[in-house]
Image 1 (cartoon, helix red, strand yellow):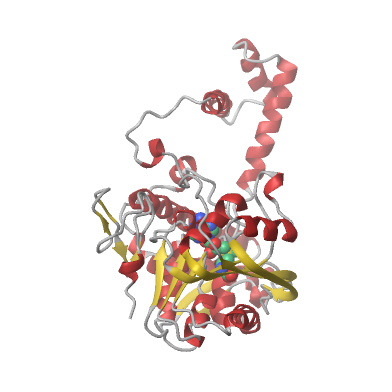
Image 2 (image 1 turned 90 degrees about the vertical axis):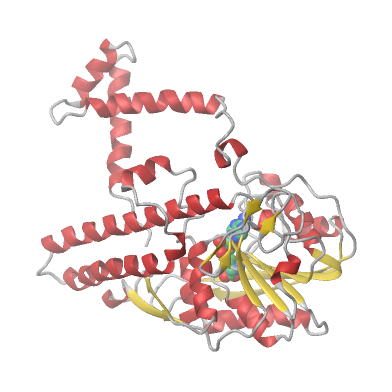
Length: 447
Ligand SMILES: C[S@@+](CC[C@H](N)C(=O)[O-])C[C@H]1O[C@@H](n2cnc3c(N)ncnc32)[C@H](O)[C@@H]1O
């Protein structure tokens, strides 16, 4: 039996952890709802996800109210069936989320505006719901898709008898679970930083049923707009399976602990360049250990040079301490929810590589700078903060002129009197700003 604790190192300083405590950094990593939070600044990570959770709840409530208002107008039309179901689905989803993410509850919730104003990063980029559909695919309707992932990955492990497997960006966890159930390894660690996926999966793999609502992108019928899903696993997971909440770019493990690392649908969605990420994967593996990458290669990185072709990816891997690299490609159905007209076929790449040697690591990944996370250093007056402050002042000034009486021309007069802009220029600028505000008011969907 291998204990999770024996593998762990501090994500801040790399010293071994004892009972989720780093003696050198004097940091205790909390265990909430049975899952350890192993982020470099666990308190900051928890606040961030707490805020995103509250924002998601507030958004759901706002959306529910919008549907209720529409229902009042269309109560005797065909639309009412759909709207009633949506209204019910949003209300129920709120309850499901409140229960599931209970381990995050700490603070009294603020109002929607406060969360919108204070968000540190746009919640839509890596929000709680970004991969919520994976929960439904993994644990409800996606048997064929789940099987094809399992076959692709497990066929590459046939001649090996791995003991310690790590899945980075494990998401809703089905692949990690299926591998653990079908192999005889001692320990599988599933790592992800999204608490919605992690807490749902933690209950599910234990053999519990989790209720969540699915809102398909392109519902086939009116009844498909909101679906109550019972998410469950075929069997409770056998011993040795662990979920942890952590940043894969600062994975909280001692070096060379694993004999298999799997990155399913992961390397192309992280913000870090492959040139930095691959050495981090290398570090986690023992020499002779196997890295399996499975999924799309649709790199999302901001630098075009980092959006690698398959050939470049293989070449880079070989310069990052990997050898015997083999790859294959197959067209597979992806996220084909049976109640949705939306779904796609993806050309999926499977790459297997064997670690030959260690390679130098790049600097420790910083999710957020210390002056944000710790809050003890001065906030730097950067160029972008200065210009953002002026923009915000102008926006606030325009908003303060909205009193239910002034026209755009009246407002432009004030801007001209204040010597901020000439009247004609001000008219088109105010109009542009108001169009954005008006359109944003009607666009807060996403469930
Ligand atoms: C495209 S999803 C794939 C999920 C899962 N592997 C699958 O195949 O269904 C990417 C996953 O990576 C997670 N993720 C992204 N960046 C991460 C990071 N820096 N640390 C940990 N998890 C991360 C997301 O939360 C999400 O669950």
